[in-house]
Image (cartoon, rainbow over all chains, first blue to last red; front, side, top):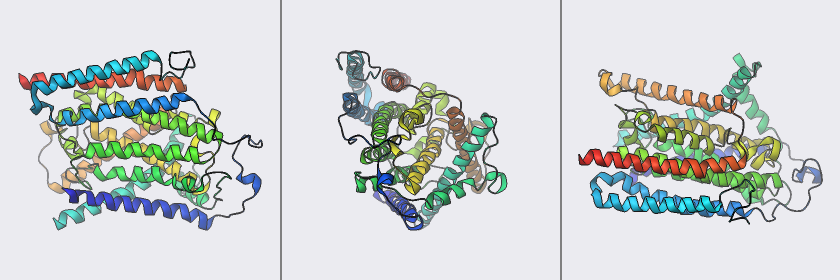
Length: 126
Length: 334
């Protein structure tokens, strides 16, 4: 079965080589005349103010955390989805409980407003 | 065994070549269809009907200066454009183009597709973060949050297909649609999958990642020459790839509707040609839908996008999954 993965590795190699060739071609063919103004980050023609490494909205961190939790739960469903007819009634009820718990978690998340970007005051961003 | 391997590398070469060309053609098609929708002419000067326009664009991009802004993380800034192109190219490894025409058949194909698709987020996010520009950073953050959010409904919609198939191999998914497409058995899953696919490829109405009016160019504000070209190429390759995935999982892959009931026996060569033609026709149709939607529907607000993903599509997709599981289980027990 493992030899089925060989074409994927070959494809990965081809893709990387192709991408690097494409990128280095423009280095070789294009001009290179840097100056200070050209190398500044774009800020609508003004001199850039400060760095772009300051703090940003906590909402993005919350989305990332929620994603990890729910993505793991989705991945748990896959093995069951493949064999759920053979696993029988017991596994079916176990999965029902699992999905209900997942739903309660989702409901709580939405209720508390962690994923609400509409700038209204919620429990999470107050 | 030896013959099978030659065959799979042949398919690999041809499909890689076709994918790269179809990305270029999609750029051309987008510009022509956009101008048709907006009552303009569009590119028609370079070659017959302007067909060589993408080629001219690539040459132009190659001859431009490659600027890396000051204070950026040079290394990450350079490798970021490679990631989306590589992940887009790697997807074709498991997609069957016809009966027995595929690069490789791995028993975790659906998981492989999900894994490769989620790796694409890194390219966009790292590009936005490494540029050290405020517009780029905002674009990258939006991209990360949006793509991550829509991966969940996408995954659940695929899981609801896996329920029918009982296998994670994409080849089995395609083969099992000979009689009934999953569009008919699982219409809600199909709708959720199509919406999530639009969001994953960052196309309008979900193109907040590069909303020109607010963020200039979003994550690729600070990219020039072929580095920008790589992001551009990756976006259109993702359109093609997502059209293929919609076709494969919900629109019968290479099967005509209800083909098992009425399609007569054919010689292997004729069947192979028919399969590839059917698959290509469906893919082209969905590429057209992608373009059509882009020039028809305006962009959402950011909170609307997140709201749609988390409080509508995700619960709906989980419910859809569970109801289908319960029905199949009851039918099997009866």
